[in-house]
Amino acid sequence: MILNKPTPASFVISSPLEGALLRDGKPLSHARIIRRLRWNDNEEGITREYHTDESGFFSLPAHEETLSIGPLEQFVGKTNIDVEQDGILETFWFSAKTQGDLNSEYDILPEELICDISNADLGVNINFGTCMTKCRWSNMPKPFDPNEP
Image 1 (tube, rainbow, N blue to C red):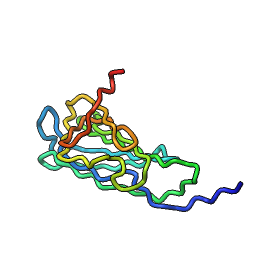
Image 2 (cartoon, rainbow, N blue to C red):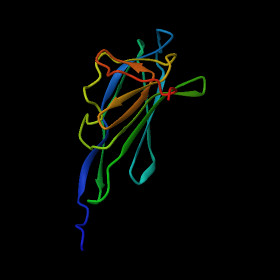
Image 3 (cartoon, rainbow, N blue to C red):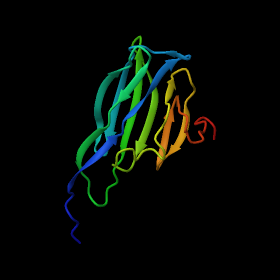
Image 4 (cartoon, rainbow, N blue to C red):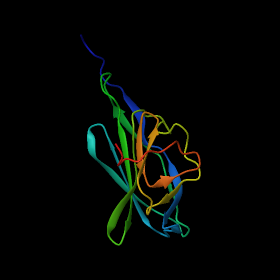
């Protein structure tokens, strides 16, 4: 049996995400945000740096790649988002997606996203995956505690 050669196609590795970044309810002004993206055979991935504004607002753009994925392979995109303060990185968002469309990692786009890094991590079941996050949003699906069996 001969399988078709993979055809290059565009995949959204990470959809846009925006919100406010806080610590103990106070805005993290001009904080350094580091987003690391990985996918399929690229576990090293790419890293980009962003900053919050004076009120802690951040806006991360979508990231697309052209990939050649065979018919028996599954696309997997992973997003880690950290904030750096005083040389210490703290993760406030991790998600994975298995579809390459824009916003395919969400059942419903997060609205009024507030990421307080003093929050405990919660797990949220999202479209075909899980998001581990310190963020909360107004239309958030029912979260679960990742430390409970």
